[in-house]
Amino acid sequence: MVSFSDGTTLQVSPHGRARVAGVSGRGARVELEAGAQDATVTHPERSAWTVLAGPYQLHVTGTAFS
Image (tube, rainbow, N blue to C red; front, side, top):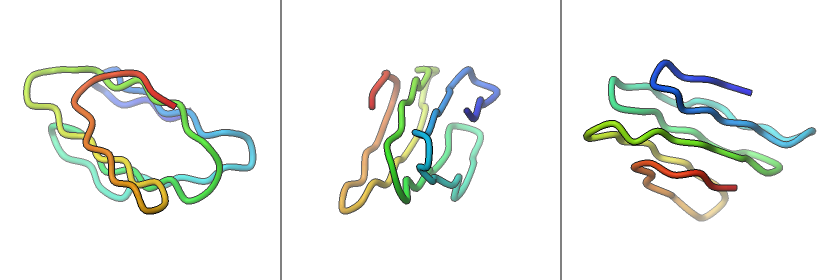
């Protein structure tokens, strides 16, 4: 599990692989390379999180998702 200072958490499935490709004061860019990921993203004002998963690019402002 990866925890960020704003309270956001990312959990990658066993045998999965993800990397934090960049961090800013408003969020981060995460690339899911294999497996699945559970995320709980907090929603401070102007949050900016991006998750890349295969051909999909998700712009997250605050939610929980898998």
